[in-house]
Image (cartoon, rainbow, N blue to C red; front, side):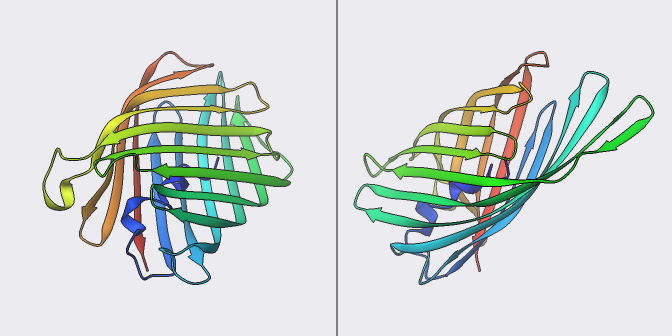
Amino acid sequence: MAAWSASVLAGPALASSPASVLLFGSLEASPSVFVTTGAKVALDRLDREGFVALGSLGGQRRREGAVTRDTAIGAVVLGYQWFRDWGVVAAYAGPEGTMEVVSGCGCVHALAPRFGLRLHGEVWARPTDATLLTATLIAGTTRMSAWGRLSWGTRGWGTGGWDAYLGPEISLYGDETGYRKWNVGLHATDFALGRFSLRLSAGLQLASDQDPGPYLGLSVWTPW
């Protein structure tokens, strides 16, 4: 999926931002590697209810036995975000496309580009002033893929910009190739480094074609 960082885009850091554009990027490092970058654009302001657009471009490298699968995936989705006293809800839909190259055993095979539909929904809820609950679900038809993540965090462990929400997270990814991936770990969400906001995560990854191993995740976003 090309939206590993998209679930930060309705977060607490935007609650008072006058900007209409948000730039973001993310990296997940594990036995497979995924990077993505993109932008979120609001017709008015990011901190107000209304229509928004989200564009992303990502790439993944994954070993499959004796071969390596490199995937590029991009999407442009349009949607609406609702602001409530307890948090933010956002829903998007739009086109996505993928390109894949399979290499190994002395050969390189480029698969035909594929295009389809992406659906994307997320919730950022603050049950109390010091807690954060997030839920994200992204589904795409080009690879019949789905990715979802749930996380919970509590604030008050640090000071100033380092007072992030800390807590557990769990995520699941699957696609038509039969590949499945579970991540179970801890996250630190919404701490500041200059004008940038960050999300760090780490834990154990269980994948259908690999032995259990660690994963590390980093997401960065900033209004522009």
